[in-house]
Length: 357
Image (cartoon, rainbow, N blue to C red; front, side, top):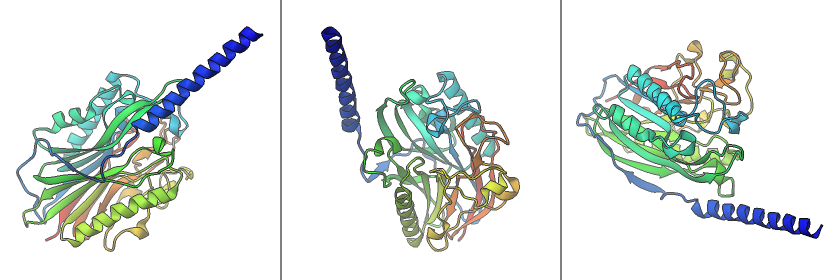
């Protein structure tokens, strides 16, 4: 009995040492980038945006290239924590690139683009997008988060990842910045991840500036005050930019539904998830709008639930991806490209617009 007791105490001591060491590692490895950072465009272009001319902008959360319709995600109640293989990630990115080329955007926003990460099999997705569009678009990358190795789920840990936001522009980029967003300050910050938005300033022929804001707001935080604080900072920045005479287009994944009656539109239930609350339309700066024309009639969702593999008509779907426009930007048309979630758990949203004089 004494021998067994010694073995048991030794095992418990080792276990506590490992767990304690891991917690120290996670806490010391965690960091946040400065509140404002300059970003450098790659493959910059030379032309300027013209007023009263129709342009196309796309926003697409690519889900770090990890998920096909066959996959689910453990944080949504599913099973997978990472992509099945390097080939799967590259195949999904190839599909994202093909879809984007078909949409022919002048400007494009991408979210959840990994520089590297166990979840995406260490594929440099930023490099893939840059290479694919290097001849036609300037590229701006801003880091969203850089997580330490997360040992969950225990059976297949999601690991570490450095991921961010990519913005493409056919027109000349004057400058670009990254701005931090409010996040939790307690230990839940380790799972909610860092958050930021990037601003890509593009030249307009009337000597004003088009500000392209790329954002991916928190999804799994249970503290709605964090989400409200993120919207408040985002809206405040956009309002100031417009008041200074600029044009503003915000594109991204808001993790809030953009259609009030989405359950009716998509013929599904309306679960009370942390990423399905209604978008705060009443908090928008005066004159700003979220274009939704044609979306209810088309009834094509931009995101699916990840608690199970995708089955059309069975899997929960809604719409959380889209655009916010300043009063001097006119929406001409809007649609969701129906990829049947072949390359991501999201579909891209595509907007045609004009800048008013």
